[in-house]
Image (cartoon, rainbow, N blue to C red; front, side):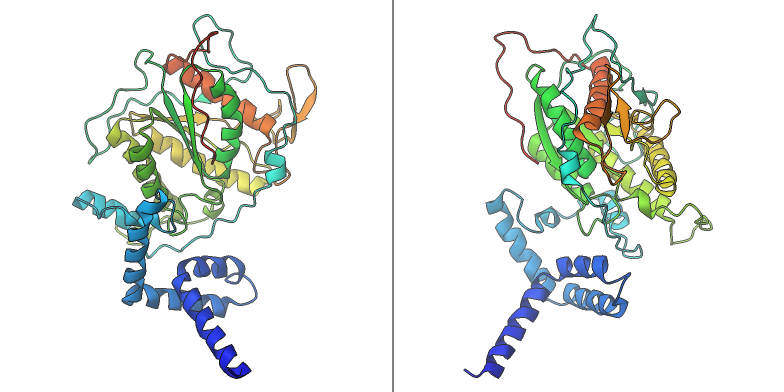
Amino acid sequence: MSWKKACLVYLIALVVAAMANIEKVSVWVDDHLADGPAPAVARQVRHARNLWRESGLGPASKALDCALAPYFDETYKNALACRDAPASEAEALALKNRLDPNQPVLKADIPVDTDDLLAALAPPRPSLAAEDGQETPAATPHPAAPATAPATAGTEAAAPSLGAAKLPAPRKLLVVGDSLAIGLSLSLRRSVAELENLELIEEGKVSSGLANPKYYDWGRALRVFLDKYKPDVVVVMMGANDAKYINLNEKPRPAGSPNKTWPEVFSMRVENFLEAMQERGVRNYWIGLPIMGEPSYARQAEVMNDIVKTECGRFSTSRYLDTWTLLADDQGNYSTFLPNEKGVKIKVRANDKVHFTVAGGDILAQSFLSTIGKDMDLRRKTPGSPPVAPPRAP
């Protein structure tokens, strides 16, 4: 075979492989070329992606993925897209809003500084499971008032309110969200290991969020995890990749306009996300974003926190926990270092001014456990108690 024929065969194989993975190729091109050196190339790739979706090859590729998914424990490629079709008009409308084609496909590109996330810069603190007679924790949470509002229209029977008396201790604690949730899980592992019969399940996804369901559809993923693990409590922490798309100067759309502002789209997606847990009566705690280092990004994060807090207030099973000042200094300003209980300054934030170190995660984790300990009967392990199943790696 001549070198020309060999090059032709290689080129054809490359094109076929690129088309088979056009969704991932499109995300990569949008991330690296759309706002940079070759916006025209990005437009052409998006055009090719749309042609692939509309052709018979796209559905055939999806059908093949769905046929293989059961053999890979729902971890194979696009397994989340293989869920059953919406069974009702309400579910179909929710799916349409979540995947609104009129909304831009946003890329989630907050970098993750893994070294800082894994840097244990302070000795582990004891778990703050709040038991009767136990000392009040040093890091005091600032949770919103327990939500007792009825469930939104279209949900099933309302679950027990968070304001009720203490409930039995949970047996499964599911953590979901972006890289912030993964960092929080690192600290929760140690504290959960000290509690009786509590299993920690970690399902964080780096660079994910509600901004780009075509990259990772949290509305569907959450429903998969709820059906698979059947957790008693869900902890949510995400938004690092969503807040940056909030335009503080964006003007509201006129009433009845088919085009919505990003805060409106984000609000609908949060509602859909929380609705999944309300329908199943699963208690959930949304950990708000802490103060951010860049002033403009901090203002965007505050707006996003307000949206999440408002949506959590609409569901009886949801509770929003305000952490804005937990990693701030005495004046309420962003700080990379904070003093520990001995007055020694420790690093609590990563160099990107977004993520937190393990020491910062300890503060957030203990604040959360202090809050949930007021709602549920958490108990420390006693000598001779059976070990809890090891936590699942993210």
